[in-house]
Image (cartoon, rainbow, N blue to C red; front, side):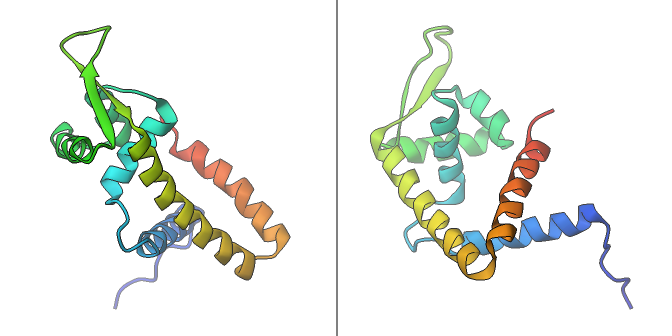
Length: 144
């Protein structure tokens, strides 16, 4: 027989965050962007133009994986690539209007799904606690 799952706060939060993440990935538009592409677009939206190396580090992915993602996004007109004025050996990746609109559509759908679940499953106090918990989770996820 296996031991029961750990009940310490870290294990409890990990399980809840993972379960919500899986559910939100399942509750997506049928033609939603793949999560890797969505993550790259969201990073460019939040941080502005970036080099592929800086993006790979921020997304915690291998540069080779990001190369394929950026090539697909560029082919779809969702990002542009130009020479980095500060260092001509590097390219600079920038979000396009097409990329922003695709990202915004997927994010709006996910937000609407979560908003509806929160409205039906949680009372106002619980929604406020969750809002506060989100800020704490962001702090935990921040780079050191």
